[in-house]
Amino acid sequence: MLLYHTNSWHYLLILYVFTKEFFMETDGLDFKAMESQYNPQTKTDDYKIIYKMKSRTVNFCPYCRAVLAASLMLPFVYLWRLYPHKPKPKKTHAEIMKNIHRRGWIARISGASLNAGFGINHLIHGLDDGTFVIAIIQFALAALLLTGHLWAPQVIRWLILHSPKWERKSKPVKPTKSKEPSKIVQKIKSTHDIYCPPIFFVEPNNLTKLK
Image: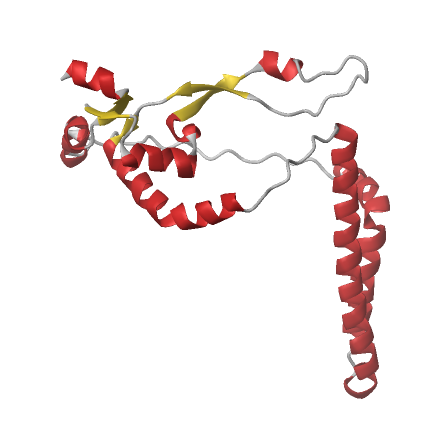
């Protein structure tokens, strides 16, 4: 076990770059916090998932890698935090669904326009090299992107309901031979806490008392 005080430069570096969440881990869902988001006046909530957090034990090896990564990322994180960021307003479920619908339309129109443009190009050059088939396929793809959301779900549902049922034949299970654990792996696991001990951070006054 290694003890460092909370004024150590590497500890402050980790806090600045990765924040205190580096030393935390999730401990299930916080249902009370999620229920508190509900607004009884508007009867809406933002459906934000909140997790319970608890402190975790950090070992020396991953901590050293994190210190090295934080040292490389420090200039970029510092410049990023100098830039003023406006807090994003919380969105309701209806607003989130509206944004998803709008982005879907943008993607469909962009894909349809691209295919239609290539189709027109092949149609023009088809007079010379006969690429009418490619033009027809690309026009069909453009029409599918624009109108597929109206009829494709019904067609897929009909195909699933009316398709012949089939059963997958189960293969006979072969008996597996139990492998003996590697002696090298066992040796590494038994000495893991010696070469990569856990780290704990305490206040400077408490560290002097422990010594």
